[in-house]
Length: 144
Ligand SMILES: [Zn+2]
Ligand SMILES: [Zn+2]
Image (tube, rainbow, N blue to C red; front, side, top):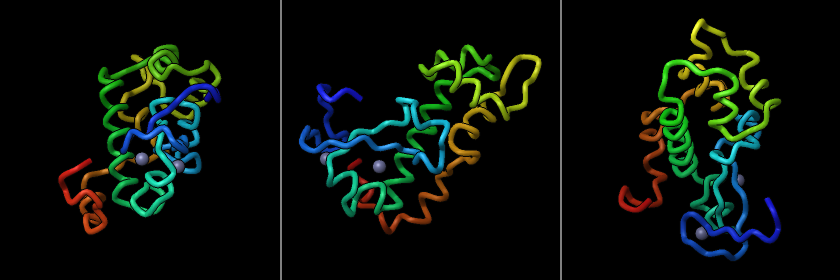
């Protein structure tokens, strides 16, 4: 991220004290640490505050489900080659190689569902998990 670049908080739109958040944390999904799809710019309050993804599980899960949906949409075919994965994720060949390393290679390439799961940190997030923490919903089921 260049210093000159101005980013706005994706929740409130301010450009004051905006930080880069990794939707799937680096510890959870190391393969996504340099993938821009996993970036979310948030102001200090919406990042570290009580309704930010590090303090509020509902917010965290909502962002993760959004990211997962984007990945599912991006990889809508059944199979992808390493090169296609690199291009679609706009990443380097070494990152693409790392992503594919532990994936099973089928005749048609790497399977989209296994790929998304791998990217998300070897797990798939579900709406059920979100329901479990509904009491933490800071938007009251209205705003997002
Ligand atoms: Zn904000
Ligand atoms: Zn963060």
